[in-house]
Image (cartoon, rainbow, N blue to C red; front, side):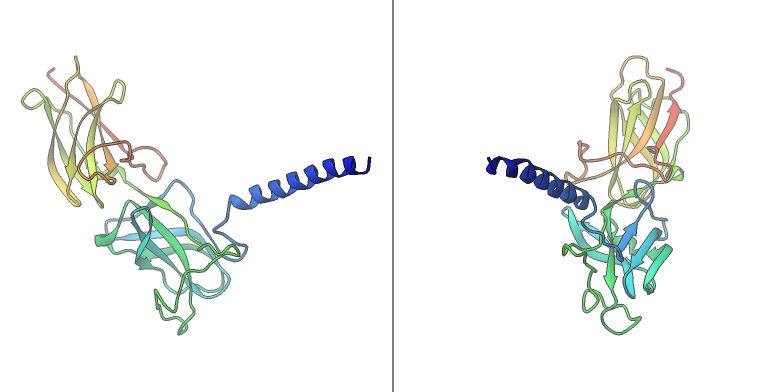
Length: 250
């Protein structure tokens, strides 16, 4: 009879432990004194390589560094902030090396462990870690800007081609043309990093084609080819960058 009393007790204890673990797992890389907070769905980087982190909290003096992507993992450091004091800092500016920028990257908190106020990454200034041994780091996506695409209403050139006057791409990307009726992909072309002028895209014409839109997609592993791993870019408002234009004379 006494043994039966242990069953609900054990179940209750197991459920409590599971609930506690589930609560902790949602924020493993962070800790009370060390954390990074970014509002929105990514980070905007200007064409001069400037960005800002909303909130950085550090248990001691440190740095906020951004690491490029390397096969889905944090790679080389491409920019660091000015020295951070202990405590919370708001709108932390970081200058990035645009030649190494990737469309996913990792804001990471580092400890000023060597000479005070002297950046010594990768050592002795190393990533701060949580009580679980994980680095204080986030995986973020590059945001775009509506000014990056300039396109006018136009007739189809040669019956199946459109020309986008200007596209700016800070990293490897694709210019994709979609049907305005159902967002079906009509055609795409790879872009050079930087400013692209008079970009021609050959389309798969579907019936009476009138309104279309140009969209910037980040180019993933299969460079130069459009696939499901090439996400459409979003702007700072959280909306997709979609530049609509009309096809005239059709």
